[in-house]
Image (tube, rainbow over all chains, first blue to last red; front, side, top):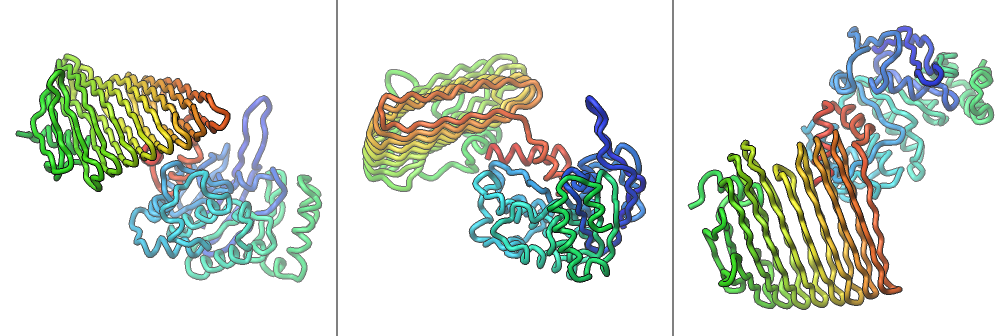
Length: 250
Length: 306
């Protein structure tokens, strides 16, 4: 279980900007959580704080009983936390095979790497020896990013807008990947998303607005006919206005 | 004749774990110490100055020539002139390279001047790896000069690598391409501490439909300095592309001047040059897979310079 206790994040500049305010949150084992909310509401910052990419200004993070607030990214990775980037970086001279092999801690078997690529809809023969550089399209690099998460036996996997940039790959396929991960592993899955198909997979939807979790929506509510439809339509209409967005499901 | 240190240096510069099959010439501390020729490849010492003539017969296919140079003493200045005649329609690989082990207080230097005559239709891959080691204060200096005259429809691939331990290097490369000749140069360079490296490459695309691609990747660490001057000169209908990518770290300095000069309206020449530091997103991604920051940095640099 991962627990955030009164986690805040502020950025000091010409003026202080509060990004997350006193977040209290419990993420239970083997559940799927979807985090949604308008642009700039703090969704990605929350995900980055879980991975250790950003350090909270105050508050603490407890993972399976251990205080991991001051642990760095690699230490958290060793505890079984993983993070899929919204815009994954590219690498010159490093092959798809190398990155997947690193993700599997070097214990890879060729067959397993091929399976991973297949599970994100890529042909291993074509991709294993490709460089992870600008020659890959946005969609291709994104699918490989997801494969680097599937490669690891994680306790907690955080996906930051996994659907963004995947234009040719159907959301159905992406949703199936999450479903399969959920069925076959004990991983807690946290997905930042606006997509209906993804939100419908969740055991709980966390709605973030203005740096606070304004609503936890339980599974029963999510499954009600038309609920996600309305939420998504409302999100599109409301755009960046956090409070108004929160009222959509109010 | 070769001791353990010599063998180590040969491994570093030419991946040689034993005396190679086929044609070779091993030069140590200013003298040729072992040589072998084959039916198709002759190696003859020059009479008027230090160096060798390497003559590959026309239509020789699939053979390689190793010509490593090792310097294991301090205070050595070795200047060598090698001439290569690559016969028509042959297809050969030449593995050169120089390793300096200098544990003394005085400079050791090797200046190799290589001139190639590549005849019609021939293909040549030339690999040159530079490596230095030794604890002494004596400088390890390498100044290679490579001149290539490529005839019609030749294909030339140059791989120029300097990854470790050379304090000062000035690398001059001059290439002329005739009709239909194709050139690919890949250069990899890493400097650290107070090392200095300069690479000057001029390619003249003289013949119709000649093409050249120069891909340079480098990493400058510590207080090292790197200077690049690449010039593609198009004098006919031709294509040329220069791509220089450098990662700058610490207090290093990199000066890169890509130049393209067109003297013909059908010359298509492109240059790209970029200098930047390691991307933090790359480090974060690899750390999120469990690598420490240092391991992530090494992985990125190793890939970049591969």
